[in-house]
Amino acid sequence: MEHKTFLGKSNLCVPRMGVGAMVWGDPKGLARLHPAKTAYGGAHGIEEERRAVDVSIAAGVNLFDTAAMYSMGAAERRLGELTRGRDVIIATKYPSGFSFRAEDFPKELEATLARLGRDSIDLYQHHYPNAKMSIPALMDRVADAVEAGKIKAVGVSNYSVEQMREAHAALAKRRIPLASNQVEYSLLHRKPEVDGVLDACRELGITLIAYSPLAGGLLTGKYSAQNRPGGFFRRILPQYNRKTLDTIQPVINLLREIGERYSKTPSQVALRWLIENPTVLPIPGAKNGKQALDNAEALKFSLTAEEIEMLNQATLAWKK
Image (cartoon, one colour):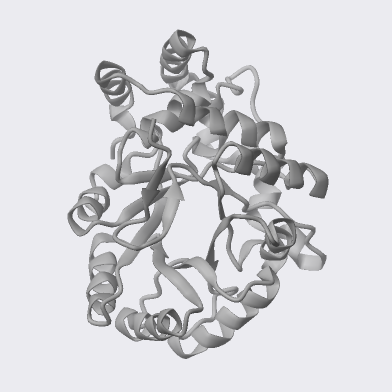
């Protein structure tokens, strides 16, 4: 079973799945109020984060994704600390705050390199588009950093089709490929299939990196109307109310049914559904070693075309 691929048309060879390190680190002060940590809770401490790194690398999953904005840099610092000297691929995102201009890019890059303790970044992604900022102007700054050897592959995140095409064209003028676009994608969030992003990725040779591939834990099968997730903020979100949890149970039951054929869990089947698409690379989060090990099991089996179609049909309501 093929576990490696090139990221888009770049020279960066990556595993077919990565590890999301959004809630890693030990933030201080206001950084502790990062929305992800507030909603989902932080990782389970540095030793469990270290185990997540160890078991992931051992399983061939050596791509780790973070961002400067996560916990005000604490996630980058922790990832840098735990992966120093290891054979890993680091993907991160800029900027570190909401006030950002293209001319700020070199400063953002240097700050991230310092937090990670690295001389270069494997995949550097613009975290979110800004209507007030010129994408070509930003990509020109990024291209300078690629030519300087500080970035190996260029990505974007949360870009629409039009924004992705604009970034792709700007980089092409410098003979640099746009390697990836990181957007939300899962069985319970199939919007990339209808907004044109997935089709454009196929057309342009860009990898779609799927964040929240387990729909915030909904596809793990852990939750139901009788067993709702903890955490105040998560409990008040509409996707975790009792009605929604009842609605997704047929999907969870199908994931269980398919998983039983391979001795796999619902979450592993949900991840495999994404992996079966050669354009897509999921990055499930891992708070501890067990979660990282469980996620990696998605690389050890394949779904049939019939099973993929069954999952497609069962989740048509989320294709919008």
